[in-house]
Picture (cartoon, rainbow, N blue to C red):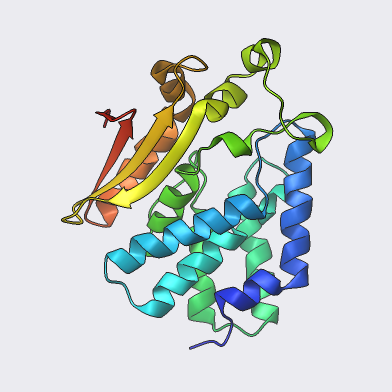
Amino acid sequence: MSNITYEYIKTNKDIQTYISFADAALSSIGYTEHSNAHVERAAAAAFMILDTLGYDARTCELAQIAAYMHDIGNVINRVEHAQTGAVMAFRLLDRLGMPADEIASVVSAIGNHDEHSASPVTPIAAALIIADKSDVRRSRVRGENGKAFVPSSENLAADIHDRVNYAVENSQLMFSADKKELILSLKIDLKISSVMEYFEIFLSRMSVCRTAAASLGVIFGLVINNSRIL
């Protein structure tokens, strides 16, 4: 087993730099927040999923590491960022001395997380897919020039992604009591965005979450405003 822990990865200055620059690149082209807040939430969710399902501690930690590093490829380009991020992660983890089998688990998950090419090739990849795609929340919406987003009828009307994310007042990813279902529960302000608009931009993501959950032997469910949608 490697001594490269999730806590160490979080403090690695090179990895922090790539996360920061990748988020800045996405900000410049109008994408929602992909900073430490996003990757830390994804890491926590990926760990929760595999830990709840009884996977061993190191597998759960590798899922955390993969989730924390999954978006660094955006520093190169948004297009095929999963694959470029996997190559970057390989070089970083190899230089840190992580064993090949653990690197393979991490880069395979990173390379398969984007919904356009996602595939739950391993339990770690499946957990990362769900953790990443389920991070929808108001605080991911950016204002102009990196400032806090100040909602108005004009800027909410201008971008459906901002509108749908800003409408989400609360989100929670959790298992049912019998652990047979993994449920994303959202509270949406319907005055800002409709449920139909949510599906307009997130349908492909919810579809890949269902596939990923099925590979883990569970059902992916979606609840919006206390109503079961999936």
